[in-house]
Image (tube, rainbow over all chains, first blue to last red; front, side, top):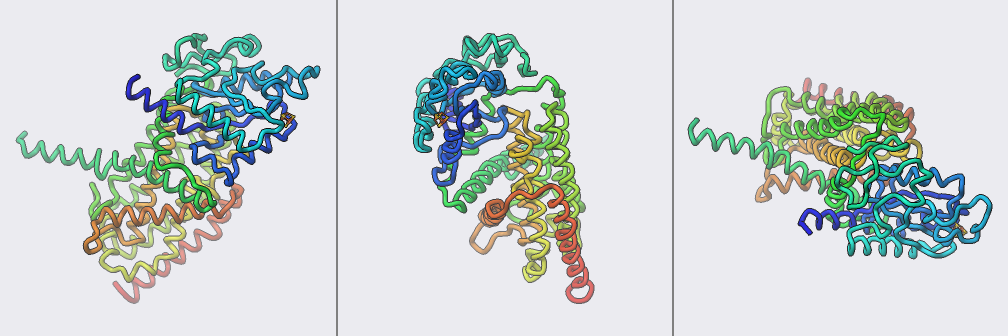
Length: 189
Length: 321
Ligand code: SF4
């Protein structure tokens, strides 16, 4: 591994900017995520910043089961995040659908819609558990250098979203061979 | 061309590109961003980010996928961040850093620097407008509206030290005021006005209306990602350093050596104090609405700057010079 790759991996581990998305949670998980972002826990120590725009984010923090209504939006927001991107599923619902599993309007866990890198169980998980999950995600990233869920934005996510993520001009890991440009108005640089 | 000329050219290039020019400015921009974030965290009783945080953010952004929205104009989208950084870096060349001398100085460079520091705000407006996103457009319009608020008080405030020193050259003003430190306390109002206007120029709390993430996602920069976003962040960090260097030259008596303390240390010390003050403003205040911001600028900052100007003109006429 070259020096630049090592430097980039180090920078990715040290500077995860997060985007918080509620895909249908009962709101308890969201409040715990916000509590984790409070000065008391000070996640900026780990370089984490909450960002408003998906274009700036690295980690999508997703709470709650994925409802059928929100699934398309979730896939679109995932597609709007520039590669490499990671997903942290927070809460039992995000892992499996939880108490909402089997509801007529619920698709299931977050991994039914987009690839997930790390799960944080709990209903809701405590803020320290969420931070621990994020730290585990970063540790896995530091070991492998790649998203645990695999970079190719495919599988369940692809068909319904009407096109996958952009092929990021040779900078993506092998396997990401989607056609450039998709329904979200993205083009590779 | 003889050998001596070549050394002169190389020395000039070194001064523009390395120290105290471009590379030094980038280093200071990263350090300034860190100090700002660290101080902000300490004011909130947090630990704050480690010292390498801005560098890690920069490298990560450079290595990330860089997207151009289909509706955005590709050339403009690429060109604007570069231009913003270039404008700010140009301004730095006219500011005395360590010791009393800028790399280049001519009578009137004060106005050139003021103009170059206005450019980023206009570029932010264009960046938002051409990014093909409604959030970007709204953020851009807000940035342009805000410009009407802080620009006039800042120019008026910068005028006062120039009147005292009777010169339009920053190096000249800085040297004159360093020679007569008893004049500095007379410019406190101007200093406060300039710091608040700079806070607005840098779009920091309480004037971060163009980037208000609760209203317009990330405003101007909503569609920017990867390397282009990294350049914009670098430009803003550099603008912080350049703006504060200007203020410390005009109001704090420049950066000549204090006895055994070298000028560079004096400069870094004054810069750090000003960053701490701006971070305190950021930590203590909440975001204003756009019309509150413009009203505040015109009803409070402009009269204060005019008062400062009046004091200075009166003193110059009757008492000292
Ligand atoms: S895991 Fe529990 S707290 Fe979280 S969204 Fe589901 S039901 Fe609510």
